[in-house]
Image: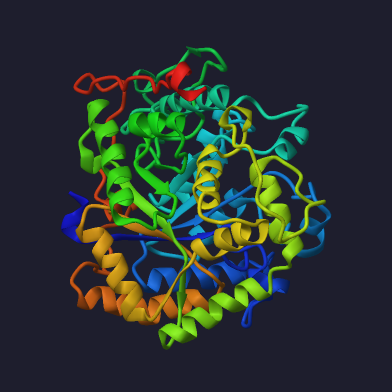
Length: 458
């Protein structure tokens, strides 16, 4: 059970400068280093010093140019994540290496081979975060006029996982002989041909790389819609959830994911729930709130309004900022992130103007406080079955990363809920997850295909 070793910490990079679109403007940021490998090496090594189980490089396959402000003010450069993880595998020793994989705009064979390669190069530390891609901008880069329908994306994602994991089982663990004297490199009966044919993919296999050290690199997922939760219950080993202000809501979400895992014949401990948290760490509570004010002040109103337009798939650019928020919510018309859309619906029930809505969206994503206050909050959620750990989306990089490791981690250790010592050599060992048996092992049951109920996911 993962809780025997305390809560799990992960550190993520979405925007290279920090969690918000304009974090690159904050004091201590290094916007001219976002394509410099040493920038990410420092990030990884700092997390490793804090005993973080994994780092996570988020990704998108487009430039956000839907609105002019996206080009004028937002960070639109990012490294290709597999290339970056390959470099980091040689500059780190313990920390897991995870990256976003779009199952809509990739093919299973490519992804299986790349992740297996990272797992071998890192000696068992690779992971992937499955996303189905939400924006039409990505579709335009891959020969489509619009993104796939939400339900179709998740059916494709479920099949994608099955194929990738099947390809990782192409070779038995002991298939390779490397016998120079006899001339036998591998055992023929240690090779398995997948011969998959489904709704979206036809893949013969086998994979031209040995079975990964972890057997299957760890699978993370962030989907919070009904379709996303269904897929998580079947396959995900770590789930990134949205911020929940209310403890009872967080506990209910935690219990829902665990229930889904059990319904798929899995142990509840085989799925870790890792809420996203963006700490703003101050010497005092007032100092933390001052830093949060600074993030807001450095975000132009136009950027905030355009982000709101993006999430709602409605152009609000001609509306006065203090005009009443008047939007007819219709989830059936949304083909992007349904969970984000629903969170805005809840905010709009309490806010009255456009400015209040987007200001609330910005501020609610952050957790301001002293190191002691933040440690108390993280400990409470962990102790009361609302989280198995946290995915830290830092408010600024590198400043808040250093502060968290130097100031919050010791507080968590003092509370007895965290141990920065690594529990093994592989990411699975860090997370307390078992190494999967091959589907071709006669003693192991063949994994059931992941399924997403078509009616529920529509």
